[in-house]
Length: 244
Image (cartoon, rainbow, N blue to C red):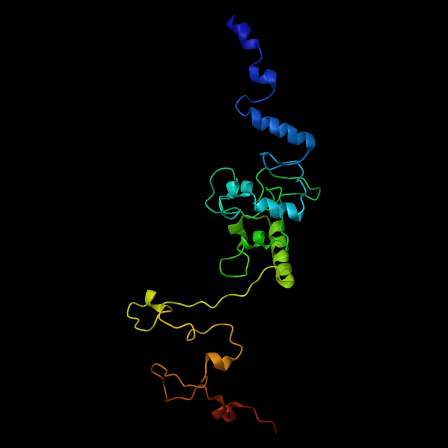
């Protein structure tokens, strides 16, 4: 009796699907029939990435689904490379996640390739700003973003294009420092004690408005008055080769 039961196929073999991941496999099979890698599909290798317009991307980033997915953080915040085993160093970035035919060549793609709605475009600076160093107009390091080299090149190109078209402002505000945080014996004024008129700003068009006396001689610590090593013209006649 036991031998006959052992020869019978299991329920999993008869059904052809996993009982534990029944819904996931059903979605996977439906995606394989259409050949498109939607966001709910986990195994994207061999499938095409769906194409969406820029308006659909902007509406998607403003939707509640996008908010619930990324929790108000950058799309690359919690991204980690899916590698086999344990590595002491982060692996180098991939060349691309989608081949020339438009199919995924990996299951665990980069933060932009894996989302069907995301792609870099200068007309949507909200996505580009997530990959910039805070307080600057420069892109983050490629290892910090987790992007493949193809998407990182597109990021640099669309960032330059956004600056040229004016969709992404890149003027850096004047930064004021509170030196009392760095020097315990600081007795000068902090930014909170200055009046708005006393604090210099980048809006001034003339250098004399910031520095009324630019030729003021500031004292130098332990200046050496006994040599003239920097006055080369006083010794030029001794070493110069004079023409006949």
